Image (cartoon, rainbow, N blue to C red):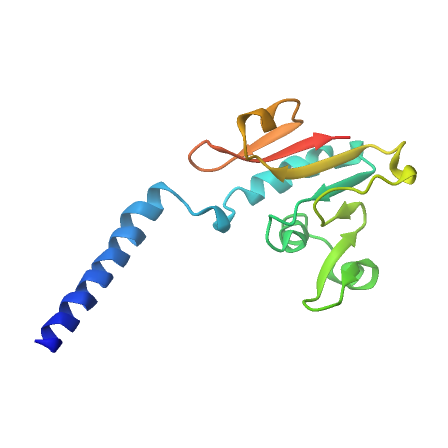
Length: 148
């Protein structure tokens, strides 16, 4: 009886996995897969010269890796010039004009600079006055670029 119950559970969970893998995930990709990141990086690359600083939300996991890969940053230059957060998990916080934190500070030194801010689209009103919107495979808004 226990073996039969174990086999039923095993095949039940295995079937659940197969349905999700072959059917559901083909239609609705998980947001953490970040399938729209190449499009986002491409759009930022096309307009980056218009801005003094570009802030990338930490909602993009390891955003610096995506930008380094898709913009083909020179690894030696990144190793030498990038600023890092070294307490706890080590990650890059700034390279060149790219800042990998949520929002710019309200420092007076930023007053005259043109900033591009990449953040997550959470509500329909987040799309108002956006420089561009990046959409996922289903056409749903995912990331937005705004200025300040």
